[in-house]
Length: 294
DNA sequence: CGATTAACCTGGAAGC
DNA sequence: TGCTTCCAGGTTAATC
Image (cartoon, rainbow, N blue to C red):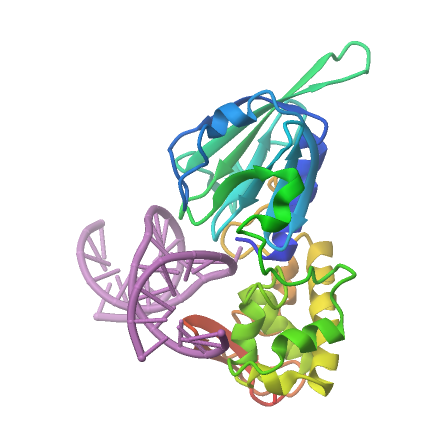
């Protein structure tokens, strides 16, 4: 499911349950997701306290009391649900369908010690479900994350301080690949995916077919604020729900109702009334308006 | 080096 | 109803 806004939505749902708790038990129902799980995966997590839950691009990072960080990527279809007494039951119904436990691959059981009198323990089950298994998990020393292979060469965080017009220009400079492909490259900007690249290019009036290098300068100046705006709006909306994305509490995102071009082939462009087109670039669908985007 | 393509997986929707 | 084909929010390995 996830691009940056969806991952951020998941992070915000998990954080209140995970941060400050510890893993009382971790179960993996298979040895691998997209990649093999790390050696001694469940043993290294069991008993660990969770000190923080952060996001970098499309990755979630749980800083543990053991000095390691649990790195999680949701791939295409990864989902977390929280099962806890008093917590809204998630995912039991998604789009009216009963959710299956068939692809529950990792189950985290957490315990939180409360200072509140009368409630000494608070248990939760956090379930990772991923039908396509493109997601993955890894463990890496927390003080060495910049050298972790998943983050090496990764571009700036689009909603962070290091992302600005200069940084964008710098990374588009000289690149002959279409701007669409360049923006999907996590080395240019972290966290963008197919939906938000299409939407940002539409808002900026830039053709997805244009060479990345030709976006340097004036066009980058138009693109930069639109990337930030579309991501902020999508986070605000709780992400986009296409087929089955839901937050940890089962809530559906609603940014999909605000798509201007994504998955809207044939619809009239809101600005110029021409038909939205669908083309294939580097094996993926691109939606755009040939009238507004040059 | 950079750019493009195939591959990894499952399930749902559309077409016949 | 059933079978086939296409498509999907991502990344990486292999090939030009």
